[in-house]
Image 1 (cartoon, chains in turn red, blue, green, orange):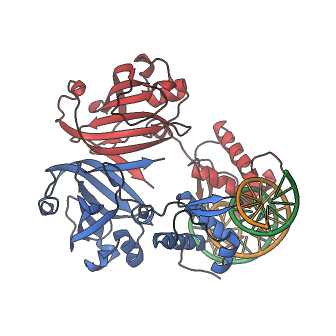
Image 2 (image 1 turned 180 degrees about the vertical axis):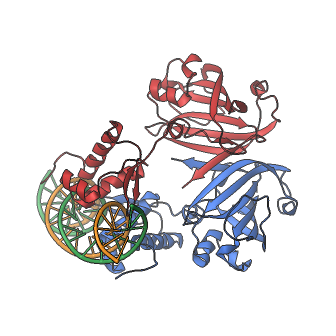
Image 3 (image 1 turned 90 degrees about the horizontal axis):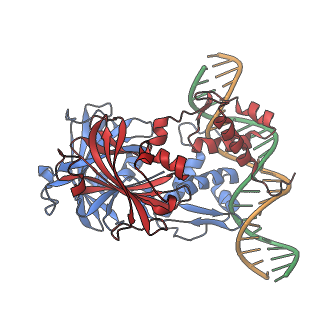
Amino acid sequence: MPNTYSLPLYIQISEMLIREMQAGRWVEGMRLPPERQMAESLKISVGTLRKSLAVLAEKKLLERRQGSGNYIRHVSVREGLYAFFRLELKGGGGLPTAQVISVQTLDKPSELPPFGASKQAHRIRRLRCLNSMPVALEEIWLDAGYATALTEEDLSESLYYFYKKRLNLWIQRIEDSVSIGRLPEWGQAHLPEARMILGCVDRISWDQGNEKAEVSRTWFDAEKVSYVSRLK
Amino acid sequence: MPNTYSLPLYIQISEMLIREMQAGRWVEGMRLPPERQMAESLKISVGTLRKSLAVLAEKKLLERRQGSGNYIRHVSVREGLYAFFRLELKGGGGLPTAQVISVQTLDKPSELPPFGASKQAHRIRRLRCLNSMPVALEEIWLDAGYATALTEEDLSESLYYFYKKRLNLWIQRIEDSVSIGRLPEWGQAHLPEARMILGCVDRISWDQGNEKAEVSRTWFDAEKVSYVSRLK
DNA sequence: AGGAATTTGTGCGTATGTATC
DNA sequence: AGATACATACGCACAAATTCC
């Protein structure tokens, strides 16, 4: 039967499955019914259902185990909020926290790479800690188009949580460039033990619409932490 | 016909197609023959070929346009063999090459993190270049379990190509830890202009069976290149 | 402008291989 | 060893987008 003006069936199904998960009707670790059984109850072919499940697996929402079954995957808070924070203690890990140093709205300096549409940006400076130990300084420039004003109180929680909750901004993708830099003057009081030469991460972040939303630079004490990237 | 001890057909096909591209037989923008025609000449079904093409599209090597055709997207060498080489010139990019300095089979030093099953490992030292400019030194320790002997001639081509072709070893996943290090003595003759303090990448690589296959350390001249990581 | 031909996308059904229980 | 469940592979029919005449 022709299905004019509608999404492909396998997309409809995958969207429906995602809604089921979000509604909490399916919980972490749960095994889905066998594919043939699901396909039958949904009145679609196994091949089409498999295509839907492949979409979920691609999004890491599902784990497919041959001979075993399809399992709902865990998405921990840590995976979510700190997915893009990539400094770790030399021994590995560490619980990330942050302390806001200053927030100002300024004209974008010319030396920054282009991002966003506005002439202005919010400059956020933070001290980053792992297990309460200061390990890095961060300067973030968020395009002013996302918010008119920003205060320190706004950012008391996770920055990306604030982005998502208050600004309707999801950081979907980042590009990091790691090199060596010198601690800026404003940071010397906050990382007193650090040597003048530090690791330096330049980041560009894209929002959910694939527009450049913010740029940032992070100076990290290479004696204490490393930049860690796990891939593929 | 049962096909014991071999990769799935659609993977074999997609790998073959990637090699065709890397060999330069297909150039950017070129349209592939129609799927039915390709499938016929390859003596496989259209569905299987489509799965292979989906793999390439996933890797952004191919653009598929309904009603039009399948078009080659990037024929960048980086996508295949140099997928895991992540140093770029400060201005971006650069064609990676390598020059073998030495190859030896030794007992694993105790200071290396654990990897592989053997007590010995092959130590490969290389000078890495971008656009023929020396930018980094590399010391790779490959578990001896993958090969009994290794010579410089073996490694004249791409190292990962050699792994794949001769050792049946695919590097599937890596973890990089970027920090600051000092140029080792053996390398000072090869990167004479570099300052003593350099960027330093510690890497662990996993093979297709998710076993740790090699560890490596790369010292890069942070004046010339950055470590670049593009994610999500 | 329009219709035919071409080409990829979707969906179904089936058979067999392979991993897990 | 047998049963179960996902993975691979084949083939077909039709829909949708593009291209060409």
